Every structure is written in C-alpha cells, then in structure tokens.
Image (tube, rainbow, N blue to C red; front, top):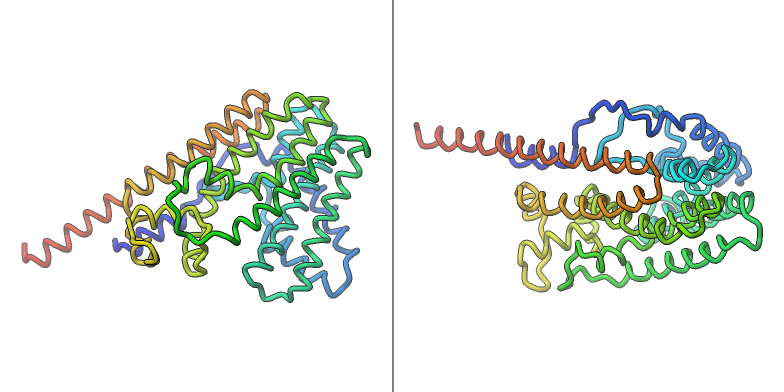
Length: 349
C-alpha cells in the first residue's frame, strides 16, 4: 500500500449500514419539506429555476434523490434539517410547527451556499447568486412569519444572528493563514464557526420559544456554539484538498498542519507535506480529539435539554470517530508492513 492509497482512505471513509431511526422517524417531515420547496421553486422566474435546482439538488441536497433512510457516515453527518425536527420533538411541538422549523433551517442553509460562491467563484453569474441568496433567505424569513407573532423575541434573535453572520464573513476575508493562535482553541473556532452558529441558532431558539421554554435559550446557544466549533474542524478536514488548492487561509485544518510542520513565516504548506502529516497517526489523533472535545460539550447541553434524538446523533458521530481512528491505524499498519516488505526486497533478503 502506497502513501497515496493511505491518504485516499482518509478522504474516502467506507460506508457502513446503520440501524439508526434518527432519520427514518422523521421521513414524513422530510417529504413535507421537499414538497414545499418544490412548490416554492415554481414561484421563481424561469431563468432562475435551473440555478436554484442546482443548489437544492446538488449542493445542499435538500431535494437529493437519496432515500432518507439510507446510512450516513460519521464524516458526512446529516443534521439539516433534522436538528429542527429533533429539537421540536424535545420541546413537544406540533407537526406543523416542527415542519415549518425544518423548512426555515433548510432555506437558511440554502441561502449560505450562493453567498459562499460569490466569494469563492462560480460558473453562475454574480447576479444569479445574489438573487438566489436573497430569495432563499426570504423563504427562511417567511417560514418564521408563519410561526411567530410580531412581538416574539425571535425577531431580535434573528436580527442579531444575521449581524453575526455578516461579521463572520468579514472575519473570513481578513485571514492571512499565518497566526500564532491555536486553530483548535475555542477562541479561534468561535470566530471560524460563527456563521454556522448564526445560521442554526434562530431556528433552534424558535423551537424553545414555541415550546414556552425561553429559559432554555442559553443552553440551546451553548449547544449550537459547541457543535458548530466541532463541525468546522470536520468540514475543513473533509475539504482540505480543495482548500489547499484554493489557498484558503481560514481553514483550521491547514493552519493546524502549517503550525505542526513548524514552517517559517511566509513559507506555504505544500500538498506533499500535508499528505505526510495526515498519514501521521499522532496528527490525525489530535484532529479527532479536538472534534470529540466540542462534540462532547454539545452533547452535555443536549442532555440537559432532554433532546434525546440529538444526544443519539452525537453518540453515533462519536462512535464513528472511534471507528475511523481504528481504521486509519489499521491502514497505517498495512502501510508499514508493505514498506518493510519492499525494503527487504530491495536489500535482497
């Protein structure tokens, strides 16, 4: 087994069948959300419908043809729109409330994708991306209007989260990739994941408000912040190749690898060095340990909120992390054995 094969194993984890009911228990809710989005897309100008379908089917995949009961992998968890369903269940909400919350969460995530492409580049025209980002966000807002009266505190929380989202985007633009800060520290990741928290928090806060549990908003916010910090590490781990090629300065994984390599200021991280580091068991273990720390912190908040589906989701993710580390160690042993055999052959043994 060559080093290229080993790093491919890191990038392409094996799929494993799961008996989890985290998704199948809400299959009817997912169908409702999909049907609603299909109906909403008909309101778009014909010129925009093809672009919109690209985002709902290929990017965020809320209209993906894959069945909702299919297995997931710990490196590809599916919390959207299920977080809305799971928290709605924890707060005892009605079917209609749960479904509109799921719709709002799907739309706000959809809104973020063309916004990202405006900054990163896309095959679509900037006016198409701007139009869709605004349209998806408007549908997110309309879902809230169906659920909350004008005097609800949700509107303050939504306004504050929208401002946080904007600050996070400006922070991303100012990163230069060379920092003395620990990229896996809470302080660094809180900045790096602020846009994720800003997208997610209003919907989950809405579930608490609809359930007359405003006193639990702080716990919901702590859950969101901790989970999003762990998610940011996971997301950057999955995208490290693309981020390296695009010279993405805000990737916490690339920053971690650059610091781990002890490169002098101004010297970039090369693909070869990144591959070498990501085949080092100690390096990979450190990455997984950081993800696990924030997942456990999020789990504690979910447990306090009695959000059983959420704790089960995190437990499955943590179990998957353990399985992945064991698999990576196995691949490492195979690599070492193959290398030893090659050396023996070269030496004429």
